[in-house]
Amino acid sequence: MAEKQTVSLKGWAWDIAADVYFPPSFDPAKKYPAIVSGHPTGSCKAQTSGNIYGTALADAGFVVIAFDASFQGESGGEPRLVEDPGFRTSDFSFVIDYLVTQPYVDDANIGVLGICGGAGYAVAATKIDRRIKALGTVVGSNVGRLMREGFSEYNPLGMLEALAAQRTAQARGAAAQINPLLPPSVQAAKDAGLTDIDVVEATDYYKTDRGQAAGGETSFNFVYQGPLATWDAYDRVETFLTQPLCVVIGDKVGAFASYRLSMELYGRAASKDKELVVVEGASHYDLYDRPEPTGEALAHLVPFFGTHLHLGD
Figure 1: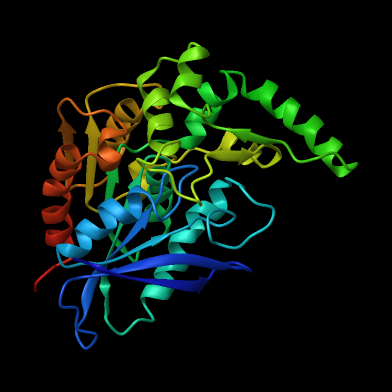
Figure 2 (figure 1 turned 180 degrees about the vertical axis):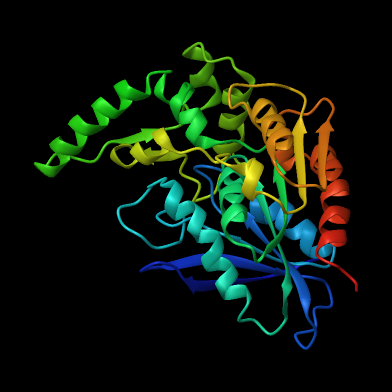
């Protein structure tokens, strides 16, 4: 079973908290390929990016580092609960800066895994940082696209007008507006007529013992959502996303659009070596923690990363 060490590493002007998962029989005198695991939007390192995929990939022989995004979880940055695409993207490179200083990391073989919204930021980071040699996504989403769609009720300009008014109010002393992304319980979702599979299953994951964790607050600090309204994770992937790519999705479609958006990424990416994995009968949140769907995802991700990060060479 993978052993875990919690570390603190330097970000912009604050520290980033991360959990490092080590392979069984880890030998610090050896060098290992490494994978950076990025958590979903509103999530934290203690959830699916670390406890499911982090442990499994470490058990397969990789060093894996799952981190909390800036302004979220146990990482630093004020104000809290900011979901800014620039910072979220650059977090990956700061984590890699840490990895390349560790003597047990093979700095020529570093990959990235992103889950849900974390996949969009992983895509953006992989376009920029050529130290990333392979990219895997699980139920990948593009939060900028969702902000222009459902998160703004398909009225991004109206959202920006409301954001401007709230920012002025806060500058004059009003309290911050923290917007929950989910209902407080599955029953509350049903009572509100929210029946979409992604909304219901996200609530079941994040609001119960199934996946609940202290750092996974599933909330946005409203006045800092503006950059997402004009950002797109897939901008110019036809030119800049050339690294090997493995895209994993389930075939049960929900409002968070991972099926549609992951298919788009797979189709548009410039990667010459790319693989699409559709897990039959699996929903978005099945691929967070359910043993059979995550097992099928890992059955593809492990050899994918093993090949492109030269595991065992």
